[in-house]
Image 1 (cartoon, rainbow, N blue to C red):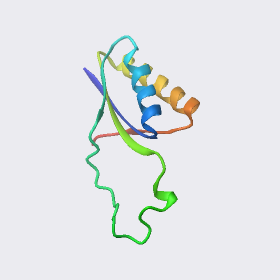
Image 2 (cartoon, rainbow, N blue to C red; image 1 turned 90 degrees about the horizontal axis):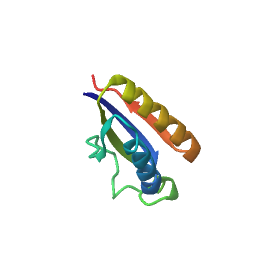
Image 3 (cartoon, one colour; image 1 turned 30 degrees about the horizontal axis):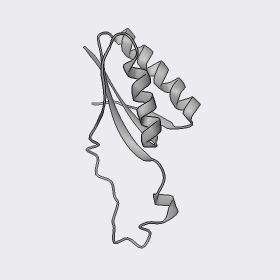
Image 4 (tube, helix red, strand yellow; image 1 turned 180 degrees about the vertical axis):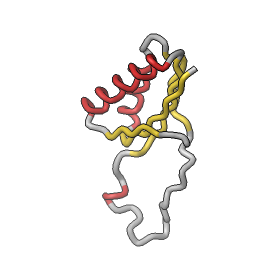
Length: 96
């Protein structure tokens, strides 16, 4: 089984759109949003808390499991084209 992790900077709706598109592909076993384990430096007591710059789209970590590496490559191509069409940021997360 092959695995791909994608980090999206997008709204909930756009994230669900990409998850649905990826889930519909043949060879894809599962697509799910997983908990983001990275600590974010959001300090509610900060003088900048609640400013408009802090209220943009959220980040979402997506885990894709597929039967083969070819299926993962196809999923990445679909995710990239969807992100481009929706105007969102997509990053491939590499686990070392």
